[in-house]
Image (cartoon, rainbow, N blue to C red; front, side, top):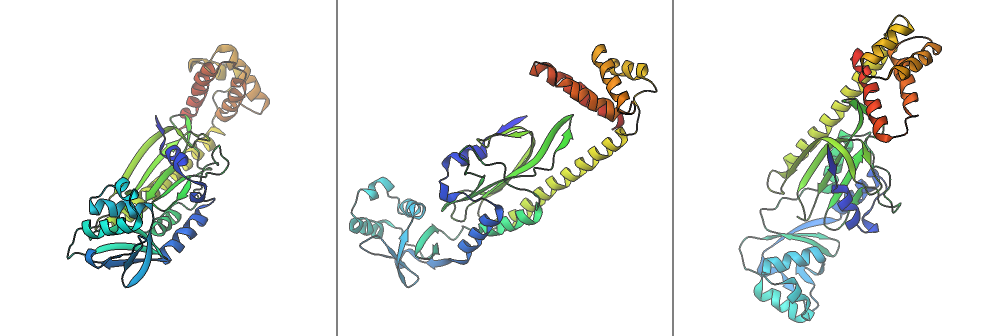
Length: 339
């Protein structure tokens, strides 16, 4: 089984203002950001650089650069960011005027209020974070963030000036897989400004610690798509993969429920001796088997459920974790008798 550290990495690189308490709060933020943003198409030679390094685009002056769009501009001009930062704003503006390549193809400039968030060529296709979250909310309405991290602030829901990341689980979706308990979860990510691809990773897990490391994950499946012309199709694929996870959860939960219902009525034996013999034949110690059968008799019978319940209680007396885990595996295997 795998250990997933993607959410852990996000936890330690995010600032408090990038954290959100709920998916609805994050979605509202992304909707506001989309509604307040505009794409301006401008040829490089039409961009006006002022002496204080603000830009005039689309006939409007005084757009400021953030760290990401400044880095993009440096790459387009093929000028080191470190070099530009050593210059005065007046000299830096002149440097961009002289080094930014001229082209008949326009640049795609994303503005939000008075800030330029990103600068791209014509091949880049934007996908809004709000659109991704709409798909997530529709496909997995029962999923929520995990418990808060050790800082009692970080929830696994993040959105900054460069990208979005969300970590969601179904806290009530525990099912049995191979005799062990797993719950479904997934990560989704996107960037409106070209910082990262669009993607999703689905999985089943056994535990999430307060560092947001996902432990003992199985059935880990990942999909991602670059922000090119067909990036919008990625939303359909992400929705489909999350829906498949939810469907699999329901199938497994229903299957486990049917097993329990059958275990409530099917007997392991007609009397105590027969039930104890069947337990020992499945590798359980003779003394433990007799004690469990007696507990089950007092509860009303020798059904598989009552005996498994008795054994589960008795296993808590085992001192060593390794021995207890081995015993629990044998106890869980008894349910396979009615599967």
